[in-house]
Amino acid sequence: MPKPTSLSRRLFIGSAAAAGLSAPVIAQAKTTPIINPIIKQRADPQVLRHSDGYYYFMATVPEYDRLVIRRAKTLGGLSAAEEVVVWRRPTEGRMGGYIWAPELHHYDGQWRLYFGAGDKGEPFRVRTYVISTAESNPLTAKWNAPVQVQMPWDTFNLDASLFAHRGVTYMIWAQKEPGIDTNSNLYLAPLATATTFAKTPVRLTIPTYDWETVKYKVAEGPAVLIRNGRVFVTYSASATDHNYCLGLLTAKADADLMDPASWSKSPVPVFASSEKNNIWGPGHNGFTVDERGRDVIVYHARDYKEIKGNSLFDPNRHSRLQYVKWRKDGTPDFGEPVPIGPLKR
Image 1 (tube, rainbow, N blue to C red):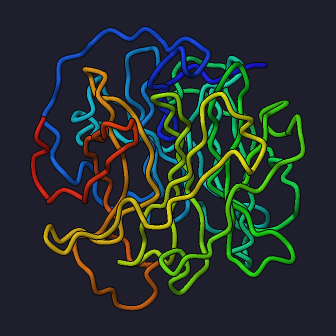
Image 2: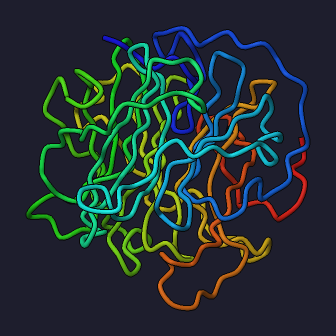
Image 3: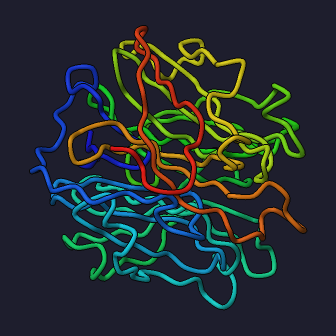
């Protein structure tokens, strides 16, 4: 089964033995100071560290109209890196609506850029698509035309992410399931190709807790962290205002990930707004490692609580980085969002 060859925004393989595969060998680079927010007005951020020694950054732009990539040799260097537009939505028809939550992966020998796209006239009719290229540099590459991912239902879906575990490459994503009164739930399936599944997808969770259902019933933006003999999945919940927060699913690394019974769910959010630090609505996160291999959470948040109008159209969700700590029992401790300014290294 082909597998990704990068340490991506939504996947960090903390132990090659636990993950059942080898992590890429990457030469250490000099560090650059990290100043939060690292990039302003970029939501749903992804940072992928590839075997070529670069950190790649992707995110949703506030115009919801294009896909952009930047890269740097250091995490801090992403702030000043040149941003390149690699795809723009068409002016009419399919994919002419909102463009959301892009993710870059290297799968089956090619770069794959997954994204959610609505249609012109129906911008919220969001489906998942992928563009691909076999060229080595995704910033200068010629990309193939988008292909739609074949999801189990023709319903609202987005936030597709790939991760490899025990020799199998999985896709995890958010989707509205017919007959369930939620905006989106989380689903998992092994890939057969970049756009098809090898097995019938399974539902991992439905938003039911009070903190998951503020204004909207949402579980979205899944991010995978494999560490300490366990598979952790963070996800974002509730509306995209100050109520936005992270939940956590956990499975043993040797469990059948396609069995919903293998997963347990935290009854409380694991990362939420910080009144003390004036950081609001943290979410749609991912994971990477710094130049020394330390775990880093990547996420967006605002630096004010009150929003005028629809939070979806407030442009000031800024991309941020901070370190993940680990408890003695091997579970992640995300703490609270750090304040604006230099990140202590």
